Length: 538
Image (cartoon, rainbow, N blue to C red; front, side):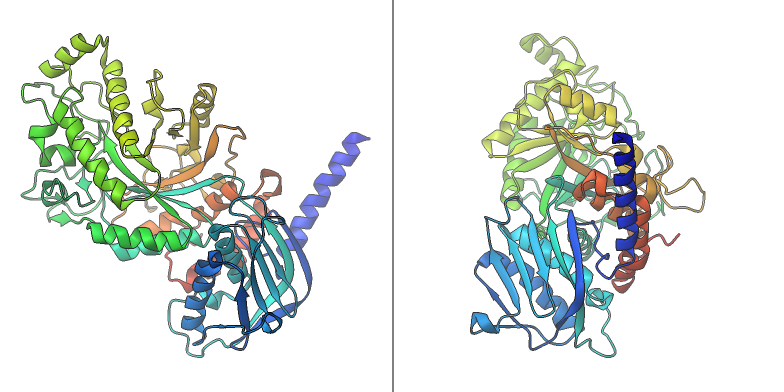
C-alpha cells in the first residue's frame, strides 16, 4: 500500500511539473518553492502606482524602474494614497520568516510583494520581471517602446535552499574590464546568485590596487615581452604570447563594483591566493616574500617556477597585514579568500629561514610549516575583523583555525564529507559538476579545458548537494586560462549558470531536468538573447 502511495506521489509531482512547464507562470529560473497559477493577468503600464511601508524595497523598485525606463520610456509614480496603489511593497515578518524569502501575489488588479529584508524584495522583483515578456531584459533600444506588460496572475512563496549561492570569476589569468565584471554580476543577480567570488591574484597577474605596495600593479599586473611574469601555464594559456597584456582594478573601480553588486543583493568575496600561486606578488616584492638564501628549485602543477611566498619571513606577514587592511576597507563582506591550494611539494626545501623556523617552532615537516602560515594568516584576518575562506587544502592535517572559517571542497563531494566530519564549514565546488572552465563535451572545437571531466549543463544540473549543518552552500568556478575574450567567458558560463542557480536555490525534490530544460529553452535562453549573451546554443 505504501509503495503504491509513493508511486502515485511521484507521478503527481512529475505530471504537475510537466503541466506547469506549459503554463504562463513557468518562466522562473530558479524554480520557486511554491507557485500557484490563477486566471487572468495584471497589466503593468505607466499609470500604475506603487507604495511601500519600508526603505528595504528601494533596490527592488529601482531595478524595475531602470528596466522600464529603457524598454518602455517611463517609470512608475508613487501613489498619494494607499487606495490608489496597485504595486504594494510590504515589510512583513509574520508571513515571511526566512532570510532572503518573499511572497509575491499577483492578481488582475494589484501586485503584493512581502519580504523581511532587501534581498527578499529584490528576488521578488526578479521573479516578477521573469514573468514579464523578455523585452524587459533588452539591451538594444526597441524600435517601438513596450508600453503595456501582461503579467500572469499567480501566488508565489519562495526562499533559497542555501545561503551561499556563488559564482567565481578568475580575472588574474586573463583580465576582464570593469564593464564586463558588472555585466557578469548583473546576470548572476537575475538568477538569484548572491556571492561573487573574485579571483584577483595568481601567478599570472595581480589585479587589485594596493596603495601600500604600488609595484603589485606596476609590475605584477603586466605579463608578456619585457616583463617578469610567466605567460604559459599548464594547462596551456591560450592566445598570442608575443604582446604585452596588462590590467588591474583601481580602488575607485573596486568601490564602484562593490556598490553595484550590493544593490543587486550580491556580496563580493575577494581572493588573494597564498602561499602558492603567488608569482605575481613575488616578482613585485622579492625582498619581502623570498628568502634570499633559498636555493630551492621547483615548479607548480601549472609548471610555474618558484611561486610560493616564504612563511619563515616576518616581512611576509607584514606584507599580508597591509594587504588585508586595504582589502578590508574595499570589501565590506566579512570574509576574505586566502587561496591555500596547490602549494608545490619542493617549496622552501633549501630555505635556511625555513630550517630556523622549524627548529624554533618544533615543526616536523612542510605540512606543519603550511599550518603555521595559515594560523598566522588567520590571526591577521581576525585583527581586521575578517573570517577566512580557503580551498580544501588549507584544512588538511587540521591546522588551528577559527571554527567559523569556511573551506571550499573542489576535488570531489567525498572531500566535502571529510570536512563535515571534522566539523568544518563547507562550500561545495566539485570540479566534476561545477568547474565551468571545463568543456561542455570533449571536442577539439569546443573552448575550455580538458584536464578534468566534461561538464554539460545537464551534468551541472544533476549535482546533488549534501544536506548537512556544515554545508554553507555551493559555488561554480570559471577559471580564465582559456578565456581570451568576453564571448568565450559567456559561452562557458551560460547556460550552466542557470543549472547552478537552481541547484543552489530550489528544494531537491522539486528539481526535474525535463521541466528545467523546457523553462530554459523557452524563457531563460530568450532572456540571454535580449542581453546579447554569447551562450552555448546546443
